[in-house]
Image 1 (cartoon, one colour):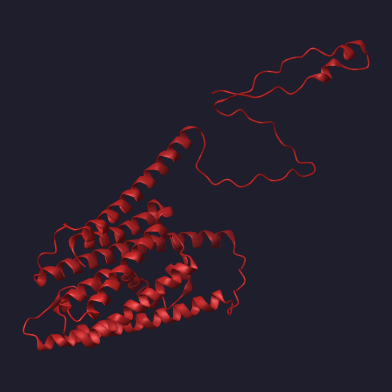
Image 2 (cartoon, rainbow, N blue to C red):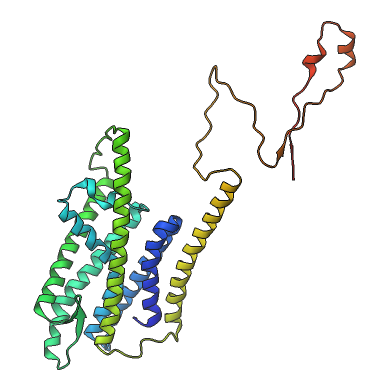
Length: 340
C-alpha cells in the first residue's frame, strides 16, 4: 500500500498539479480528479485492512499511509496560517485568487474526503498510537526531526490539528450548502476604479506566486517525512516495482507530468507560430452588429489570400443600345481567390 511505485505516483501528482497550474491550466481539473481517486482508493484499502482480524499492519505503517493520503490536504495549512496572520481579511485571502477555480461538486466531494480522513486520524491518534506504550520496540514519526509516535506532545499536536481541520471542513460544507440553496444573499458587486482593479490583479498574482512556493515546500516536506519515516523505522522490501499495483500508479504519475509538459510546449509552439504570422495570441470578442451610420471597412488582404484587380465585363446588348444606362455602373465586385 506504500510501495515505491505508489509513493512516486503520489509525489508526481503533487508536483505535477503545482506545475500544471502555471504551465497547462487545462490539465489541472483532470489531475485533481486523479489525485482524489488515488486518495480515496488508498484510504478505502487502509480501512478494509484494519477491519480484517488477520491484519498485521504496524502502527507506523498506518502513519505512513496516512501521510500519503493526507499529504495533498496539508496544502491547506499555509492558507489557514496566512488567514490568522492577516486577521481573516478577505482582501488577502488566497482562495479568492485561484489559478484554476474548482467546481461546486468537486469542492463538496473534496471536503467530504477531508472530513473522513480527519475523523480517521482522530481515531488513530486517540486509540492506536497509545498502544505503542505496551510494545518493546519504539516507532518514530516526523516533526521536522525524529520523534517517537507516542510522545505526548506529538500526539496532542496532531489531535488538535485534526480537530480544527474537521471543524473547518464542517463549516465549509455548511457554507457551500447555504450558497447552493441560495439561503445567503450575494452582496452586490461594487464599482471599482481602474486603479483598484489593477491593484487587485497585482495582489492576486503575488498571492498565487507566494502560495505556489508554499505548496512546493509542503510537498517537499511531506515527501521527506515519508521517506525518512521509512528509513528511521527500518522498513524493508518496499522499494521494488514488481507488481501491477506498483506500476499502475507509477505510470499514471509519470504520464500526468509528461502530459503537462507536452501541452505546455504545444501551446508555446502555437503561440510562436501565430506571432510569426503576424497574429498575436489573444482572446477575440464577437464582432459588433452594424448600427445606423456604422461604416464597415473593406476586407484587408491576409497572408495566403489574393484579391485580383477588378476586371471589366462587357455590357449586355440591351445596355449598349440604351443611352440612358451608364456602362460604368455595371461593374461587379471582383471575386476572391484563395491561394493553396
